[in-house]
Image 1 (tube, rainbow, N blue to C red):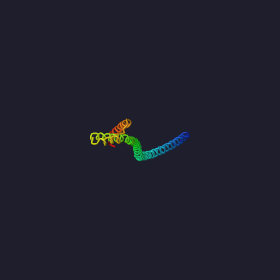
Image 2 (cartoon, helix red, strand yellow):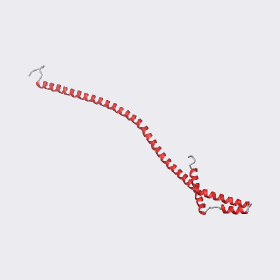
Image 3 (tube, rainbow, N blue to C red):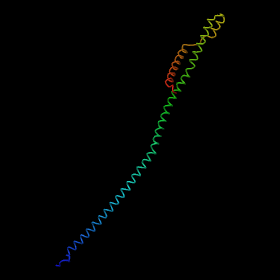
Image 4 (cartoon, rainbow, N blue to C red):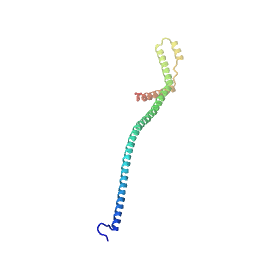
Length: 170
C-alpha cells in the first residue's frame, strides 16, 4: 500500500465518476437553462402575437359594426317601404271606390234638382200651359234603385272620410 499522496485506484475511479457526473449535471443544467430561455422567448413572442390579434380584432369589429348597423337600417327602411306601399294601396282603393260612387250621387243630385225646379214652377203658377209642358218634359227620373245606390255611396264616402280623418298627418 502506498501512503499519503498516492491515491487508491478506487478513489481515482470515484473522482472520475464524480467529475463525469458533475459534467453530466452541468450539461443537463445548461440544457434546462437553454430550454427555459427558449420557452421565455417563445412565450414573449406569443404574447406579442396575441396583442396584435386583439388589435386586429378590434379594427375588424370597428369595420363590421357600421356595416351591421347600415344593414339593419336598410332592413328597417325596406320594412317601412313595404308598410307604406300597403297604406298607399289602401288609400288608392278608397279613392277608386269614392270615384265609383260618383255616378250614383250625380244621378240623385240631378233628379233632386229637376224635382225642385218642378216645385218652383208649380209655386209660380204663371201660366197653366207652361206648367203642364214643364211637368211633361222635365219629370224627375229617379228610381228607388237610384236612391239606394246613392245611400250606399254616401256610406262609402263616410267610411272614406273616417279613413282619411284618422290619417290627417298624410
